[in-house]
Amino acid sequence: MTTRLSDDAAALPKKSGNTGSVTLSGLATYGVMAFPLAFAGLPIYLHAPDFYAVTLQQPVATLGAILLALRLFDAIQDPFIGSLSDRFHQWRGTVLALGAILLGVGFWMLFHPWKEAPLVWFTASVLICTTGYSVVTINYQTLGGLWKTSASDRTPVTAAREGFGLAGLLIASVLPAALATRTGIETAFLYVTLGYLPLLAVSLWLLLRWMRSAPLENPQTAGPVMGWWTLLRSRWRRLFFGLLFLNIFASAIPAVLVLFFIRDRLGAESYTGLFLLVYFLSGVISMPLWTRLARHFGKVRAWQMSLAGAIFTFCWAALLGEGDLTAYAFVCALSGLALGADLALPPAILADHIDTDRRQGEASRLFAIMAFLSKSGLALATGLTLPLLGLFGYQPGTALTAQLGFLLSLTYAGVPCLVKLCALLCLIAFEKDLTQEKPAG
Image (cartoon, rainbow, N blue to C red; front, side, top):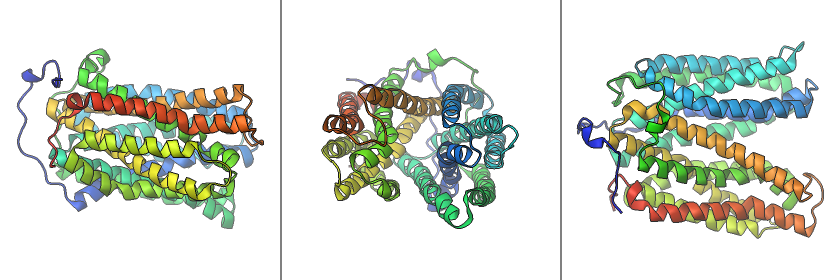
């Protein structure tokens, strides 16, 4: 197979040979913004619904319907945010600041409810939060793609960002519960909010300060607001985003079912926090590993390795049953390693494409597609897995028959294995088409 990077790459200006060196201080200053972004996710989607249901006595079904509608809107708005971000790339710093303000205001509103109309307040708060989050995330990831550096240094850039993000998830998973045991739930989230807003502000200040001196390959002209068919005309992009969606969907299935699997299949609900801690911590620790493998073998080959490891891990998970706690802890550790690759490698591969094809003017839209696929994959997994299990008689929290236990294991681990195997075979078949770098090894 021959690699065709774009239909009109020859007409583009020649690439400058100057690249910026990647330093630890630069990685830290750029990457730290991922911490408050990732931290916000769990309070918004996990803690806030429980807070409104338990503390404010709001109906769970209504809260779930509101969240589903807001998730759909959040996914749909990503391409529009990407288009506008490309159109107004000269003001990216201002756009980031406005997005952070929306995120901060929405986060504060979420845990300071208007008790006369809590559902309206909840809807408005989550909408403001998620819109601000999407604006910041898309533009923040775009900056990583525009960082003018060598191909081998792009994986450290994404690894630093995602490592800080996983650290934010870790803290968010334990801090509210730890505070609530001492102060009560309302006071706990008051403290969380009071700590979060300064953290967000300082992280934004560091990012904007980094932008002033960072070697960014900014577009020379503003792009059109739309033009999505043209954007996906490139065969490389269709291959990459198709494979990416397969992998996202495969990873989203166990993410949706993990709490049910731990409680109903393993009988280990009290160990849920420990399992999640092992999973996220393994993801953080794996970042240097994937950086080295990508540098030596290339990013596409390293991604293949992670998919193969994930397939083995979930095949093992499918065989587990009640009481297999130690084995599942190892499954969490190994799947956490694969998580590190899923977070670090695809954005770095996309950044290589943007640089090689000289498509800086489309960077925000391309990263917006990644965000859209991530949210769509999670929504599809949510919409398929639980209803299908329900059709076969599965009721969360009740005792499982042997058949239902097998079905839950098959859905949680077996289906992701098959989907990831399909992604791996396609990634091997189209390796030459997708590779746009020369590995060191």
